[in-house]
Image (tube, rainbow, N blue to C red):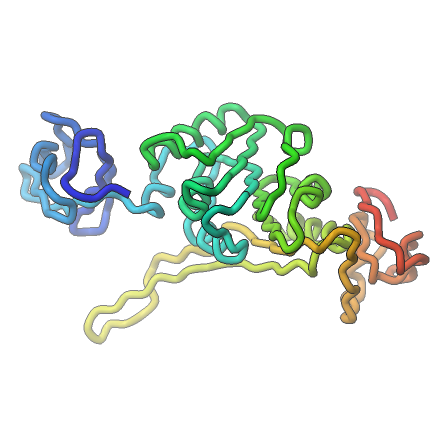
Length: 316
């Protein structure tokens, strides 16, 4: 984070009296034109942040360096970003710590990457994987723009995670992708015992498929699923009420911890709801699901004491 006088080439956020924000990059002699008149960059260069600058038309703007969540929602994007409310939950639920060895699959535009790199610090390692070159290029520009240089612990790889994943041990793994269940085996082989897997998915269908894949795998704890919403509040005098702005559904988070090698997660005593694994269900079947539940059969149910092998879609 930069402090001190504002310098040439720095990004500054200008906020008007209605709360509208504009991000500009300071250049000597440059002018930012608005409907309320021009704002001179020279009025800000060399001065502190947190000052008020006035346009030719008399509009006042507050000038600050953008903090991380402001940059994440305003930076150029090629793909949808992980919004700050979800990124904050990922850092907490996945317990991202300084020096951690973290895998991130599905870089998108780099918003979550920025948050992860700040959390692991210069001594950590973040291995990011993105299938699309265009997305990776945008993410790289956004990350280096925010940090100001190349992060020493960041490696960005273009390709399918299962095909290009390296063999180094991992403390944490974050999967933000369309079908994270396809990567559970590859990631599980590299997560250290006690390591945390966190999946970010958009739909309930994806959420259920990931949860059942982890249960069928047997080497992870019972998955924990959450959704985060934020509601603004207006507080002025006696007028205290919910605000008009609300950040509702953006995605689901599912977290689980890796067991030690050779260990199998105890089967839950709570039985699934009737019909949960009925005739229409075609996904992986957890070990604690009886063979006769919903009329389905499973060879695994006949051998409950054996560690299960991962199942694939279409198998009963």
